[in-house]
Image 1 (cartoon, rainbow, N blue to C red):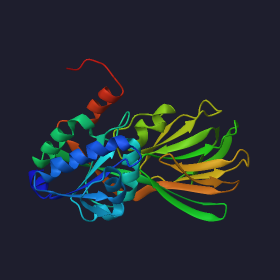
Image 2: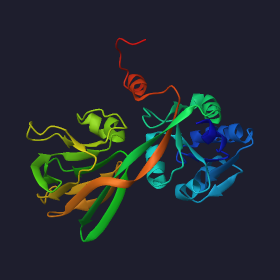
Image 3: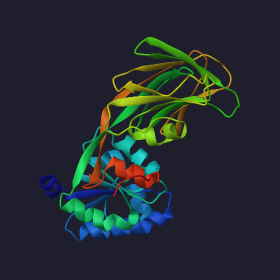
Length: 294
């Protein structure tokens, strides 16, 4: 990766503009990058929040077109937003965690200087991550959305089960009566799907998972499906209201008869990891696993 590292001359920085505590870290990132002779670009929201004097772009999509590396300072929520907005771009994304668990970020904020030094030396790998896309006609409106972690079909605030008829690749699967369904990428397997009893999946696996949330039928277990699968979910019961969300963001409310289609998105994002890191190491650190390792 040494040759690729030498080509990184313009670095984009995006922070969590909703956290003022992120401002000093943004300023420190600018200092660390500019002292190497590289140019720094920011999105307008981050630059305004941290009062940075650097070139700006209006949003993430515009930023990816002018930089060689995107440095994201925040938690998994910030990473998810940036990943969706950068989807389809080949610009690598390096996440520095200032949030909580941080499965998508490479390192904690205290190691940012070391991380950037490793990047300049080419001590990193790039890993493509798939996204899901959902399309549906709800309430007469056609909706589309992408997600790096998951698409969730769930009940509203009412304490009643929803009823959803599911087909996979045009074959009947089952009718779920449950609190909701989670369709997850491998990247999202450590998020909501894990909390609902789904399997942890290596992010490079060519699969997606379908995990019911609190199913009424106890034999309704999480499923691992080929990444080529198309999932169709038809809303059966009119009450309670059924919601669709992508990466935790509600995108629509659905009614009886609405059909929701979920499949792999043609777009990907490229995440940067420092050499020596691994998914097994991430699981041990983030989930506090122990075992016979040194």
